Image (cartoon, rainbow, N blue to C red; front, side, top):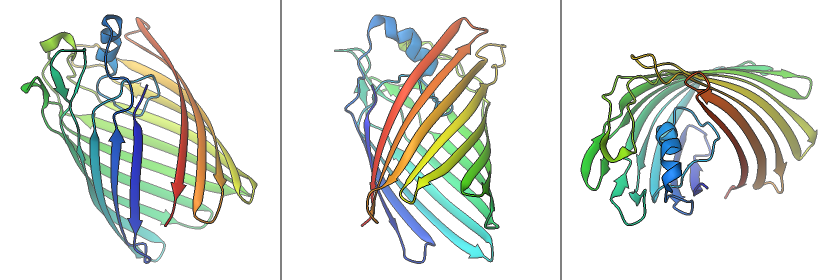
Length: 274
């Protein structure tokens, strides 16, 4: 399950301007069996990157533009991103499904005091209308996200703490096609704790624990919680090539345990600088 993602980044030598272009190739499974539709209903709108098995999508394209300035030890940044989503079939030989495009704007700040780094990011995100068979099906609207992190260097190790909040505007319930459900209030929170340690000059290892909480909607339904543990390694192969290997293990529940989810994700990223 899952698609293959490729991204190209370019940054000016001054470091004050960065642009990127990405593509998500539709190589993952995106045809549902009858028994998979109910689970897809619950996972359709991704509140956070919770690593449970998820379906592949169509051909997605995205582009980003970010600028930054430095004032002594303070870095200020601003940027935008646009995601063009491709359509695909949910059930074989039926209507095509188009998830709708996304656009987001961000403001960020970072204070670097050598052994301690504090970062804040504010993101405004808007989702266009989802369509099934060319007909409007669901409008998720907009959401606001605030991300804050604190990283402390102790000897050779790096310890980080993070907090992520999302606030979404209320949306009407949807019953069309039997695939999408009501998504009236998806306010959510994520807490994280991580450790990264250099084993050798070219090899780092890491471990992380995250706790996700998704609030109930206006009707008192949909409350969810997920806990995730991840372990990874980062290998600097050459001055320009880096390999990242990571395993993530998740478990959670929804509606007071009526729906329980577990998942495993194995991630391999090869990064090359030109």
